[in-house]
Length: 335
Image 1 (cartoon, helix red, strand yellow):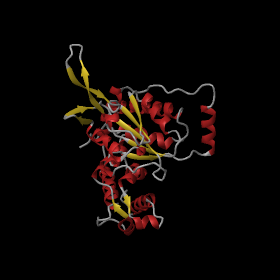
Image 2: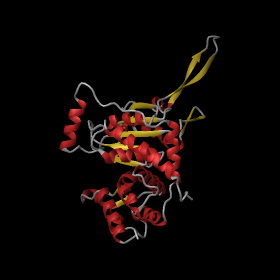
Image 3: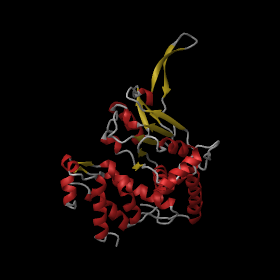
Image 4: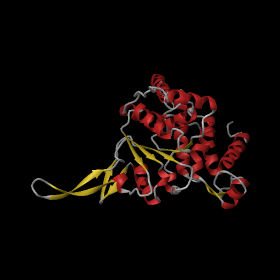
């Protein structure tokens, strides 16, 4: 059970820090407030996020700025077709000591950090992509028969080019499910793009400043898990997740005819955490149904698959999720 009451002073202090963080991030990643809020919610929830967009839209800049503002040690891996799992996790090397004795020494890979930027993750082979699977879920990796714990906190912010681009590989479904949210980054509008050009092509640029440190971030992550979830909000989460499974009795005809598989229980867990974090970012002490509905697409879209027949008819997962959300809202689950 979650604590139904949270200290007002604590909430006010956290809300102030979060507002400063958003301002610092938005000074370098200009104009896309929803992207910043979703990424921040994923980190406050203690999870990972997948940033999807074409090259040149600021995904790398966003991750680097988050690392600075949140006070996290950051490593970056540029994923390429020839990247090997050991290039991410590390490996044992045979080392000769001064005494002449030879022994194996483990050399840590870039995964041993607090914020890992997996840049263009879908340009590596499926085998290498899967090297992150255990790390993302269990916060440890098994190498040479030994379990090696990762840092606390540990987050992966992965960038992905649209899968239609040449030279990309679809991420394994099991790994996609480990991302709390898929955050789509679109082209900025004209005014925003003009602001970006003026801010980034001068003699100097706005620099990010650190707002959080690891202890304070861990404290806020614990606070998120203490936030209450009302019965109506929980009912909406369950109805939404179950209603998007084609074999469930509550699924609509559109879902049954269009969806190969729907979101699992981990998706419902992610919705709860992200809804709490969204409420906290907006200065509220509890999540509500509106939070769930607003997060339905980014939390669920990468955990579903369309049938080939649906794709040929031009049906999209966005359409399926949107129609399911609209139906549930109209049926009065918010009451």
